[in-house]
Length: 342
Image (cartoon, rainbow, N blue to C red; front, side):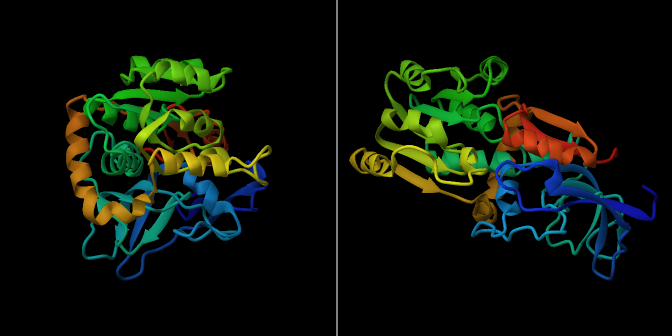
């Protein structure tokens, strides 16, 4: 890539099931130049997150537009202002933005947050950014764990789940994780301080979960769905709370799940046990909760009470394969792409 060109990864085809490398295309385009009121950003880090799969379909979710064929994939980024014609930003400033899967992008400044001089700027895409904020709002505002409660979270080694369990421990609750593989479960217990973690790939998940939750489950942080939800549902206590931020097990479904219709049984359990199920989209909460999150989470991380783990891959061209791996559960911690050295 020369100084006169920029790189970007665009959506080449709508996936059928799990995305493949052929659904993406790497392009070189002329380097954009800022107009009056704009800044030119050089992307340093790109965040890869499960929600992006929903945006690859022909019709996106109700809270966001689908990515058009031939358009760059969307995503949160940490970038450096390299040229500015905006009165509020100067060249050299480090910012959090939404440049997407591209090496350079223009912004009018409305979506940018100054990061200042931070030691590890990529954390603004993980535990100190959207995934951590999702865990914070979902668990503390909706799950509302009390001392002695049992909190269960799937994808416990991921960007959101790993923070959920640690927040539960901060609030005096038991934290039970479910993850994919022995290594992830060991990390969740030994490094992050969960009380237990179960490998979802091992047989008899429901029985093993019941054994580590002898008093039932008070809070289930739902971000997976599928067989994990099936194992959790019978163990939910009266008055249990279930924040729902995702159902990654179903993002690649091309047809309804096989087998009997489980909806009537689920609805009966919700009714009889008075379970509070609340879906939430984190975009709705930035105006009134983000400042408190940044203040509290920043303090907890600085004090070592919350530990953050990153899975960093090198180069923009590695983003498609890394994203496919994310949907298969191959990442350990928050997945970010280092697009360029700072």
